[in-house]
Image (tube, rainbow, N blue to C red; front, side, top):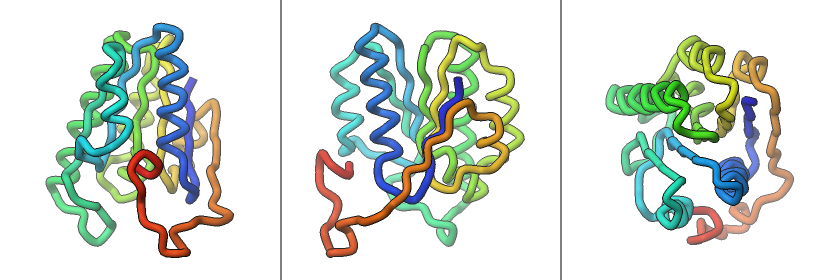
Length: 169
């Protein structure tokens, strides 16, 4: 199946990583590809290192990417991530592949939706795919078997509370 976790609320990556830990509990092999993220200071990176069946690849730079700061290097790194995803999906080596922030990479124009659609359409049915990030493309939503929208109703950031280790990262 193809899952999409999207919306403006907090918790899309957390939901995907929660599914990864559930899969690991059943002895499944998990590959998490993080688009537009880089850094060993993320909780999911630290936790994944404890499991030999949980691989993570980060395909971003150590800076926050916005629509205004996107550059050629960001596009190249996103293409590398998508190439790694295509290879991993085709290998049948993993039971669950998470494409974290892929929706944002598409929304920012780092990748083309047709590329992603082809990979999803040609995937082995034995591989579960999760796609996360805000602004999911309508054509990706159409392909998906499950779509969950995580919507912000209230957030403590608005009270000035900053990101905390183990909660936001």
